[in-house]
View (cartoon, rainbow, N blue to C red):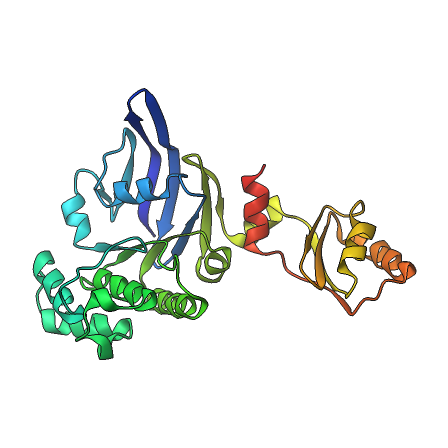
Length: 305
């Protein structure tokens, strides 16, 4: 069942003599209970798209719908059933986390505010920080508070605009775990991110957007078969630089780290002769094994094509 539908959506901005086409006939849909990833570089149109879905901007043409309601003409009805958390949002300097959540309950005209605040704090693990000024939170706690705020109306659809941007490894991992829990509770989530690992871990489907246009859309598995049909081998060697020179003309691509190479072959049958070539070279090899391509590999290939 589709809960979000975007059809032929276009939007341009004009500043002086400059015209920027932020969205160009964008099409996609999101199913109920799905985590849908929207990936693309800065300026690709992600935030413009979210702003239209929230009713903050009016498209030039096309339509965005949520729950079968028009995001432009019926935004008031939609906002009661959705919410937004952005990694770029600010937090009030003067109130505690608990006070701010009560304020948002009042702002949204919600009943049972005490129950809602308690549930929202529990879902995001902020119960013991309720009396702390939200503006004094660390970056990780601040992001969790913004999601807590976004959950206060128990939304069916949650829009997460780069929620882990700027976070350290542990804080980002904790936030990803929380997003997974929200998915398990049946939330429908649109996630924008620059983190390929994050998208691969959380998203059921992904769309890649560039210059305001959706380039590809589907599951990682399907997109990999279509756009990245390569065999990938990882080789660990203390002579990685020497090995790179040996293989540079025999493979599609090489990614090098300090003591290893990840090599990309056009066909699985290319692996055996390549391994023979390495063995004959006398270069020390500690391990060699096949690995699955990563979402970053697919993203790089599609975006640069």
